[in-house]
Structure formats: structure tokens, C-alpha cells
Length: 282
Image (cartoon, rainbow, N blue to C red; front, side, top):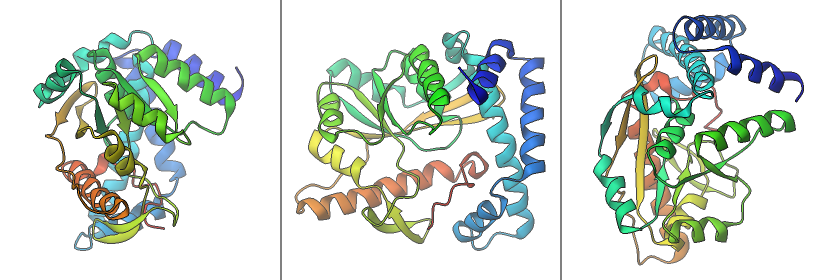
């Protein structure tokens, strides 16, 4: 293990919930605010998504976004030693009966998530709660960092499929009763579906809608919000009504729009907990 991966793993061995996590979060937050990575991108994204907002609100939201990212890292690294702690950190769950019913019936599902709240912690909670979760991920380019993160996810009980996966494997997994985690809220190239997101046109990957169409399983929005450090609320919503009967491209297009609207609804309650630093509207 080398470079950043070694530093990260060393921090995971040191950090604990409490004073150490608080110190780490303060350090990360201060560093982010000082460096201001993609601050202009975040401010412009907020201006487009919330055109009636004030500059002061947008600046404050970016500040809170940096704080959120800092706590997200501190929480996740604190979890590495004992993943079962996440069951105590999620203090409120709404809609759990939806996943329980799907699990009991043996029916698979698409778990529609987004880069809202602590999404890695959410994946750990799902896995530790006994739901058969495999997430579609894009690993870092650094091979040492990618290997370390994969090790952490495996320890949490989260299976993974690399983003450039073979679609038939994902479809087969869902059909066999697996819960396939997808986070389709990031920018895509022109091969994707062009449509509105927060009222602005952009491209979204059509793969998630295609998988749902081929697998024929429910698409269940799931999100986690941080209420305070190490205290989270998980909300599981009823399956999205997916259209059927159109020709394939039309079905994928319409269902992608529906997924986008579901993601918007995840972001609105706590906008500072979404990844505004990402260039969503290219």
C-alpha cells in the first residue's frame, strides 16, 4: 500500500467516534474551506438549480457542503473497525417494510440512491441490516486507493460491480433477488438521455432505466440524511411507477426522467448534503 491509500488506512486505524472523529472532521473541513476545491462550480450549480436563491445562501450552502464531506469521511473511517456500529448510528428508518417485503418475497430491486448524505454509510447500513446489496461503483484511478476502498466495502458487507460492467450480469443479479444499488445522479456524455434535472437540461446515464426495464424489478428510492454526527435518518420510498408499453428507447427515456425527479426529491430537504462540486450540467 502506498501514498494516499497508506495515509487513509492509517487514519482509519486511529480514528474513533467522539473526540478523534471531531478533530478529523474539523481538520478536513478547514482544509476544504481553505483550498476551496471546485467552489466556483458548486456556486454556479446552486445558482442554476435554485435561480431564486441569494448569493449569501449559495455561499453558506457550499460552506456546509464542505463540512458535510468532512464528516462523511470521518464517519466512514470510524466505521471500518466495526461495521456493525452503523446499526446504532441510523437512529430513524422510514419505510423499512418496503425492503423487508421485497426480501421476504425473494424479489430483487433496484436501490435508487444518490450522492446525498453519507452514501457509503447508507450502503453499509443496508448490508449490515441483512439486505443483499451490490452497488455499481466507479473506483478511483489510483490502484492502491481503489484496492483499499474495495477492501473497506467488502468488510462492510457491500458487494460491488465496476461501473463499466456487463449489463447482463447486473440484470441477472436483480432477477435472482439481489438488491442492486445505483447512483445515477452524476453527469454523463452525449450517449445518455438528455432531459431536465432541477429544470436544466443535461445528460443522464440511461443504463439504470435499461436495467430496470430488462430485470423487471421495482425501483426503490433510498436516501440517508445526517441529522447530527453519527446520527442518521434513512428514508425508503415506495417504488417508482415505471412506464411499460412504449418502444424500448421511449421507455428508457421516460423512466430516466422519473428517476431524475426522484433524485431531485432526495436532494431538496438537505441540499447541503449533495455533491454540488460535481459538474452535473456540462
